[in-house]
Length: 408
Image (cartoon, rainbow, N blue to C red; front, side, top):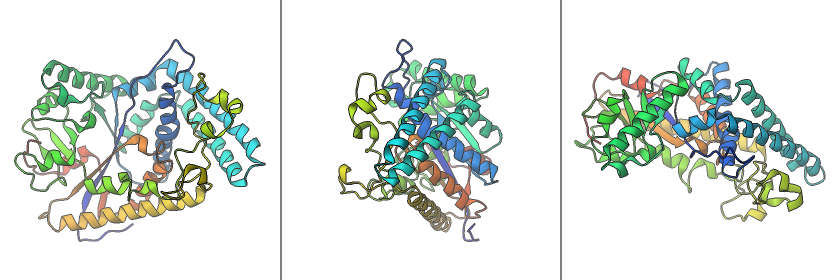
């Protein structure tokens, strides 16, 4: 725990969970359905596991998460639920085979194969425990106050391209709200507009459907009318009385940047080296697409090693070394947020800065294997902090005595 009287601000972590709707019930398996299965295995359930550990340990955490209508529908689809369990069984079988195979190859690979088997069995246990109702599991955390789930427009379409078709925009918002109610049993309070797509006047659609806040990219506020007094670091209210929260570019750079972002650390797992491509065809055929098309299996033995290191020269991945890197990066990110809030507080005439850090949920776990642990360690680092206060948009709105009216 750190903090002092020099400034206090709010931190909103926003995770946008979305995949395009894919379901081919006439086929026992289909390549594109693996997108969903990989994301459940590598992102959605690991995030849920981390949230549960934080709650178990009494750690204060607040996460805002959009789950789009296509993703909610796929989560609830019985055919996809059955296929996902088949996918897990196949992955578990492959991990078991890899344990036997790597005994004579390399002890580091054997340790990793054992780790993957245990990890996959735990993921299957979580999925079976909730009967595949992942939305329900996240919704429980919303009921207890740790999570704020927001909706998204129906098809994840880019709404500014629909400005000549107001009926289409209205339908996108209406169906997004209805899908949310169908799967969570409650009304959404906020929305993530796909790709942060917004033009003046969209707030009337949001207000009509009972939505009180949304998110915009940084430049939407920088070029707002009038210019926002606090830049992107305080939400503004639109003419239709809907609050707009803007992306913090500093947080984006610290995590997303290909040059300086945390996921590029040499100790982290290499995404592009997978046994689905490394193993001989006869051995790997049962675990890839039935067409014979090579694909990721999730079993990866190598680390990034270095930005200029070719795939065939990567070093073996060390889980403990990567975990240490995750803790280091979580502490560094927390310290950067403390410094940022103190700097902003000195300029804000007593108003609390609000840092909004939005990311694609799938970055954490799928692309950045250690990402869910980074989030968990970040909230452990911030637990009890009096400078950086994890919050959700409704909590920020409730704390505000006044807000500047701006048209993004």
